Length: 188
Image 1 (cartoon, rainbow, N blue to C red):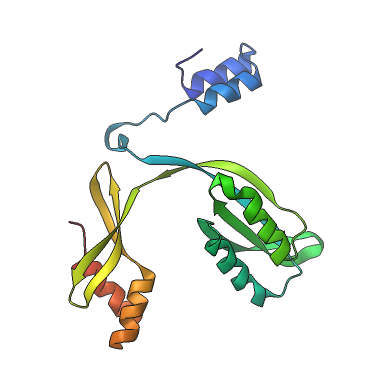
Image 2: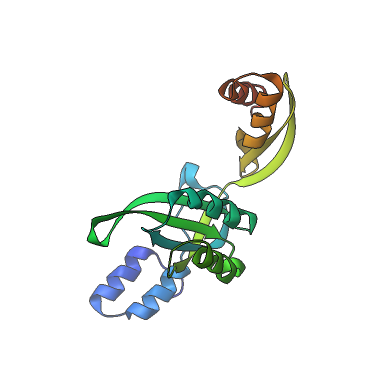
């Protein structure tokens, strides 16, 4: 059973013709069926997702933890509200990381927070191609992210630090700087 779709695999498992372990192995090798406008080229990669719940830490320290994780190579760090055992309000820390940084970033979490353990798993991502470019605007040159799908520009996103710098230099509100940069550096 080499080239098959998910429906065929599920039918084979239900009928007993295929074991669960073999089905899982086959599912990992399936490619999504893309039709019409969906037939595009997206980039793929694998990341480690590291998570823990924190219910007994001074929230003022969370910002430092986030900065530290990002400085040490995390691709993204997020906090979400969470209700833990004994009805304790808490925060769920989620870190997206390159797989080789799993132990390093987990150690930072365990030493810089009150967490006593983390869980982690491998995840696959589909993403747009992303490049950094400098675009000329009425406010001067600005770094932007250019996002492409199959080579075509999907959108241009201003870099926060660049817009923040321009807002401080010009006295123009940050939201207005964003609008100007988006309008003047659009897809090209």
